[in-house]
Image (tube, rainbow, N blue to C red; front, side):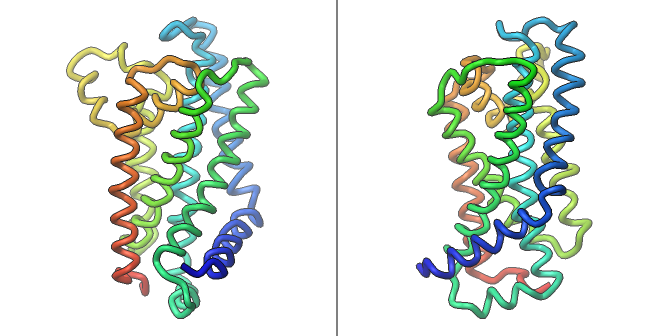
Length: 253
């Protein structure tokens, strides 16, 4: 593995989203803060508690996770896809850099962006309601592996997509609906059958509930089960992204 190539590409990706921080950092922060104001503050005055915790606290982990999912996916998908469309991917392909270095650089930069925005959302939430992290270890586990998983999924989407309409399918018609149906704003225990069982087929449910357990110590799903689902998802998309990069699939659009 070329550490110089890895460092160069990683720094390039970090500088790329840093230069447009109004779009990559401030914009999702403002959007998620509005969600928090509407659902956490406004509805929190009517829905007192869920799972034994105040509703305004209940929605915080879900909003943090939804933000990190979105940003980690968008960072890798938009960067890699634009490189394909602009033809600048050729500069990377002719350089002495392998698939492993590309995966580590793209995913590492996406994780940094997602964690920065997620931390800022958490700090905004603390200005409205304060609570300590119940399980720091679980919080770090789900933060790291979920952001890495979605960053890898963003690479897969960018390699598969041939035009911007293809790329827009994932955040608009897959991730956003699954996030809203993944227990961000409610507990799935409130759902009647068969919707309670159907909701458990949603992988984002386990990501949201895993972080909620780390934050609040309560969740609809066992953290061990959530961790298992996240790890399996991580390995699947890691294998897919690595295989596509090694084969050079659709890199020259």
